[in-house]
Amino acid sequence: MEIMHEETGSHGRYSTSVEGHTGEMTYSRTSPQLIIVDHTLVPDALRGKGVGQALAKHAIEEARRGGWKIIPLCPFMKAQAMRHPEWQDVIQG
Image 1 (cartoon, rainbow, N blue to C red):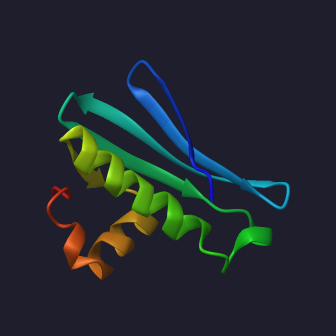
Image 2 (image 1 turned 120 degrees about the vertical axis):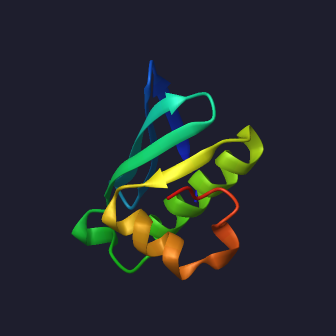
């Protein structure tokens, strides 16, 4: 699954298109070392296909590569962070 990344100013978005539908995870950058994941949207047509999980994992990998932390305000990302103790190195709060 190819994840696209867009960042404009302090706002960013990870997205992927599957079967003509797009899932996304958005964030706000509060500093060079911190982002807040504030929203995840997976259309009903993509539910159960691992799209949300792929977006969350990509955000974690990007944080590790970039040396920043993630505050998971989005309920989906917060739940994923709780399910994956191995992600705690980049999760704040």
